[in-house]
Amino acid sequence: MILDQLVQASQQRVQAVPVRDRAKRIQQARKMTTPVLSFEAMLAQPGLQIIGEVKRASPSKGLIAAEFDYLQIAQDYVAAGIDAISVLTEPRYFKGQLSYLQTIAQTVSVPTLRKDFIVDASQIASARIAGASAVLLIVAILTPVQLQTFITLAHELNLSALVEVHTTAEIKQAVAAGARIIGINNRNLKDFSVDFATSCQLRQAVPAECYVVAESGIQTATQVQQLAAADFDGMLVGETLMRAPDKGQAVMQLRAGVRG
Ligand SMILES: O=C(O)c1ccccc1NCC(=O)[C@H](O)[C@H](O)COP(=O)(O)O
Figure (tube, rainbow, N blue to C red):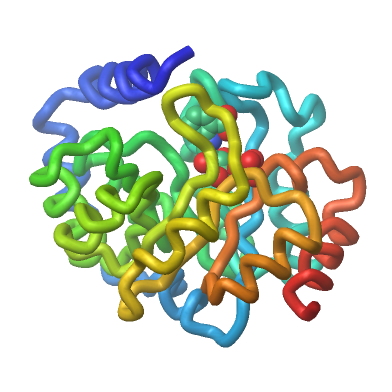
């Protein structure tokens, strides 16, 4: 499994929808007036915010959650005081669905993030229609023009864009394209290995006017303390929470790291 396959699968899903229907979806999203819970305002709160992920499977780990009551998981996260919820919507390799995000967004009172391999504007529109607060945009899979266009569209639709980077050069590209929220992913997208040190190493390269989120491989209270000390605004945690038998307790353990 390589990144190209993930991107191709996403392109195929997009292209299965006629161009006319995709354009209609964008028009529909542009007309929407329903309020959006702000992902950016969530990150603006003092301290390190916890974004818990609803993640059934992954290319690197296979099936993570044999039992997968996605709504119950989201409600458990919220009951434990999570600040936002990321929902994998990629169906093939992560076994996600946009309908999971829609149901969760309709039910919970915290911002939600559409985590997918976004390669087309219609996917951003679908996120808005489903009730998401934010979309993930990955610098490594987009051209500079696509990145700028997608960030602009997300903002026009009142969505936040979490712009994911892996290097200093990608941070510069993200900022040049208008990113307001940078996600530093500890997972190398070439071989899917995880190195927690990546986020702290790249943190200083993010300009002060951007919010910054650490993504992937976050497991311990010590790591959480390091992220708080490095002045991250948020952290995105998937597998650690998904594998925890007691989600509430697992969120509280991460929270203990935030408090130090
Ligand atoms: O999780 C994967 O195996 C993966 C492989 C290739 C591209 C993306 C992948 N994951 C998406 C994510 O970025 C994570 O779901 C998210 O950051 C949470 O990571 P973790 O806490 O390590 O589950």
